[in-house]
Amino acid sequence: MSDSESSGPKVIPIVAQTPAVPPQVPADDEVMVSLYQAHEKIYPRSVSGLFSHWRWVLVWLTQLVFYGLPWLEWGQRQAVLFDLGARRFYIFGLVLYPQDFIYLTGLLVISALSLFLFTAVAGRLWCGYACPQTVYTEIFLWIERKLEGDRSARMRLDAGRWSLNKVARKGAKHLVWLAVALWTGFTFVGYFTPITELAREFTQWRLSGWETFWVFFYGFATYGNAGFMREQVCKYMCPYARFQSAMFDKDTLIVTYDTERGEPRGARSRKADPAALKLGACVDCSLCVQVCPTGIDIRKGLQYECIGCGACADVCDTVMDKMGYERGLVKYSTQNAIKNKWTQAETWKHVFRPRVLIYTSILGAVCIAMLVSLALRTPFKVDVVRDRGVMARIASGGMVENVYRIQVMNATESAQQYRIAVSGLPGLALASEEQVDVDPAQAHWAVVRLQLPYEAAGAGTHPIHFEITSRSSGAQVREKSVFLVPR
Ligand code: SF4
Ligand code: SF4
Image (cartoon, rainbow, N blue to C red; front, side):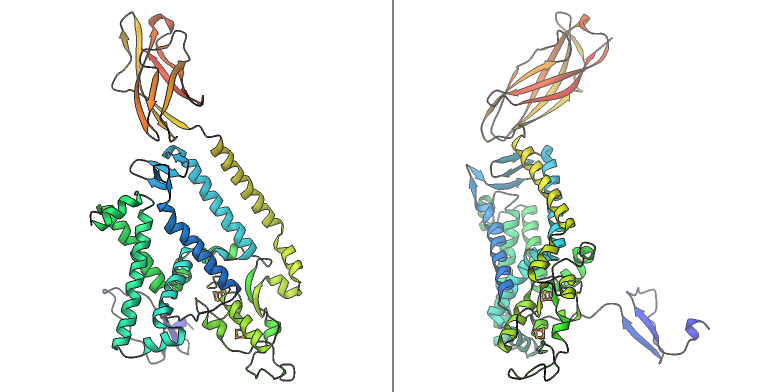
C-alpha cells in the first residue's frame, strides 16, 4: 500500500508558495503543520548574581573600548583609524599599508584559535558575555526595563490597550533606542573617517553619501537586531550556534542542571522536608526559564539555543538561598563532572585536557610570531615597476638606459630620507637622484633611470636588485627587477 493510501491523518508541510501553484486545500483527515515556528516574544526577567555581574563588566569594557577608542589621539592624529581612501591603517604607533595584509591574516587566525580555545574550555563564553549581539541586547533590554518595567509590567503593557501611558513609554523607548543605535553607527564610521571631522560634518549635515549610508545602515542593524530580533539572531542566523557542537566534548564547561539532585521537581513550602515529600531540590518555580534570554528551559538538558550566559544559574542560586538549600543546582559544570560527581578541583583538572593545551600552545606560538614579526618589521615598503611607457633606449655616451618607477612608503610618523642603490650587473649605475624624501606616513613615487655600458651585457633581460636604505635607521629593503638590453 502506498503512503497516500495509508490510513491516519496526513501531514502537509507548508512551504513558501508561488502564485503559479494553487493553494492546497487540506482534506478532512489532513493536518497542517508549519515548518516555521511562529515567533513568540520573550520577556526576560531581570536577574542579579555573579554571572550577571560579569556580563555587565564585559558590557562596560567592550563598549568603553568601542565608543571611546576613535576619540583617542596619538600625536597629531586619531590613534586608531582605518583610512580606506588613503590605504593606511593607523593603530597607535603602527602605520600599516595594504602590503601588511599578513598581519590582518594573523589577527584572524588568532581570533579563530581563541574562539576554538574558549569554546573547548567553557562552551559559548563568547556568546554569553562578549558577542555584540548579546551586549547590545543587554543594553537595549536595560533601557526597556527602565522605561516599561520588568517582565510582568512589560507583558501587561503589551497586552493592554493603547493609552497615553503606553504611547509615551513605547515612544520614549524607541527614541532612546534610536539615539543609541545612531550613535553606534556614527562610532562605527568613526573608525574609517577621522571622527572629529565626521562629527563636524554630521552636525552641519554635510556627510558624504557613503558615510550617511554606513551610519544609518549600521545604526538600523543595531536597532533591529538588539531591539526586535534579539534571540532570533542567535537561534536562526548565527552560524556559530550550528557548529559549536563540533568543538564541545564531555569535559567542556556548560551551564547544566543537576538532574539527579533536582528531580523529581515540585513546589513545596520552605519549611518542608524534600526527602519526606520524595522531592528533589528543584522547586519548579520556572524562574530559570523566565530569565533566559532565549526562552529555553535548561532543565531539558543542553540545547543549541543556550548561549551560556549563566542567568539561569544566577537566579537558581537565589532560589536555593531562599530555600536554604545548597547552591549550584544550575551551574557551570561538565557532563563528565555531573555524571562522576567530581569536585571542583577534579573538574578543572579535566577541563585543562590535552586538546585545550594544544590550542593554547598554538595560540601562544601564533601570538609570539605576530609580535616578533611586528617588532622586526621594516618601517617602510617599496614597490618597483618597470616603466612600460619608456622601453630600453640608447642614451648619450653609448649607454643603455632603462626607466623604473619606485614607490617608497614611509610607515613611520616622521619625515624620512632613503638612498637608492642598484646591483646585479657590472657597470650598472643610477643616472637619476639617488635620494628620495618622503613625508611622515606618506608614499612617494620616484622615477629612477639606470644606465649600463652597451658592451657590458648581451642582449636580453638581466636580473638586478634595487637596495633602498633608510638614512635614519639603516633599515634596508631589497627588491628584484630586470634590466633590458636591446639587440
Ligand atoms: S530556578 Fe532552579 S528551582 Fe527554580 S525551576 Fe529553575 S532549576 Fe528549579
Ligand atoms: S539556558 Fe541559562 S545559560 Fe542558557 S541561555 Fe538560557 S539563561 Fe542563559
